[in-house]
Every structure is written in structure tokens, then in C-alpha cells.
Image 1 (cartoon, helix red, strand yellow):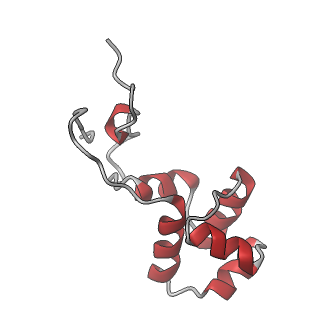
Image 2 (tube, one colour):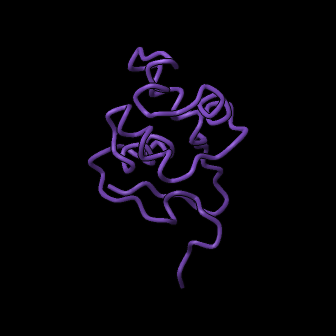
Image 3 (cartoon, helix red, strand yellow):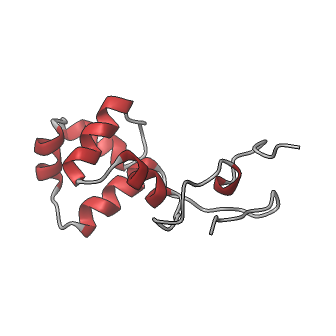
Length: 101
């Protein structure tokens, strides 16, 4: 069952920093452990978790690996898409201009 949104609905989602922080806390992982496992600097993680900077794709992969999740898992978590529901469509994520036809 796919998630459906109309253009008038506001879909709340997490930023990548919020998702990383929540997943880290859910796993009872300290910032220091994530920094070490993902080979980040303390300031990098601070800026990512606080939303002040967006991480590069290689950094996102390193964080996912350190957290034991896939990139797909992270995106599903950010957009609150139940896992096992199939691949979410662009329109189900509330992306503007995603409707075809």
C-alpha cells in the first residue's frame, strides 16, 4: 500500500540531520561512537545533526554504515514511509511538481 498525498496536504518529514540524530539515539549510540565509526570530525557531526550543513553523499553512506542502516532505510525513516510498503513514489513524498498528467 503506497502512501498517498494530495497537493493540498502538508507532509512533515525529518531533515537528514534530525534522522541521523534520532537513529543514533534510538541505538543508544553516543556522538563519539558515531564519529569514530563514520570517520567524521566532531564539527561535521554537529553541523549535520543541527541542520547547519548537508552532508555529501559519501558522508551519508559512511553514517548509514556506522548506524547499520541502508540509504533506503534512512530515506524511508526521513519520510515516515513504512518499510515493506514498496518503493515510495516521488508524488507520495510530497515533492512539488511530481504529478504526471
